[in-house]
Image 1 (tube, helix red, strand yellow):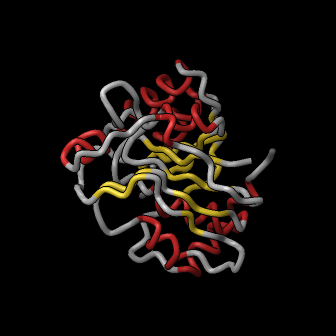
Image 2 (image 1 turned 135 degrees about the vertical axis):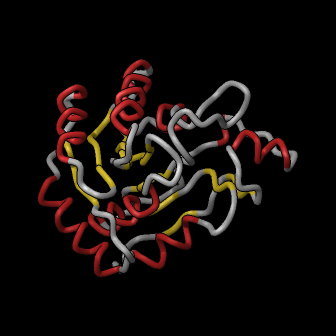
Length: 203
């Protein structure tokens, strides 16, 4: 089973969560759209320490740090949903989205449409800040409107038990992991979170 990592906003912790998932399942990693540098693929490479994970090249590697639709337009590139094909591998792939799930990739489609095209469930990253309850509930509503299969939520940032509780209450989703506000992320920290994730994981 492949999984698509999306989030309620930009800089939510998708890349760290993707590294944790890759480490937990010794899965491959793929970022279909990279807009701007540094490449998230390189960050995940630095954090994953198992020998099995392979890193697949981006379908679109754009230099402009902007929404994919804007970066593509600035660079004369056309992005279509039909461009996205699961890389050939016998392994599970963790697929990292770009920005939040309603970030546009062209004039018609959004990041949220990529997991539908690829036929894989999503893992939602909710970073905890003032306003994250509203953003998380709106994101889940948008996902469910499109019949996207949601495996669960991973919370990221300084713990806020009441925000976490009310989000889980209203979404009926399962919390797969809580990633704390770490000063530095190291391979050892990723391995520790991977072990916790596996203990929480149920098919």
